[in-house]
Length: 94
Image 1 (cartoon, helix red, strand yellow):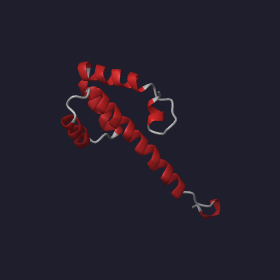
Image 2 (tube, rainbow, N blue to C red):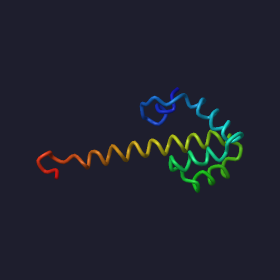
Image 3 (cartoon, one colour):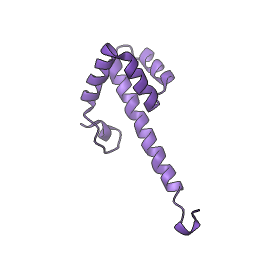
Image 4 (cartoon, rainbow, N blue to C red):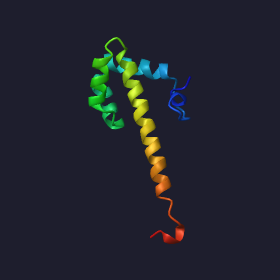
């Protein structure tokens, strides 16, 4: 199943398992780069820390991927709402 479908968004996202594998690889080989990606995507560091502590039995990469996808879905939703609010008649635009 595609990761985007799980969140109700159709996209060209790779399979969730592929994302988990890549994030796990980054955890082990280039953690600083992973942190920069999470910062750029705007994943909540606080939320991530809480989830990792609450679910120590879960693979960290799965938690990280879920938060990345959740954040991207939030951005898509926010942009679509903003776009609807910005629907101004052409004659009323500056």
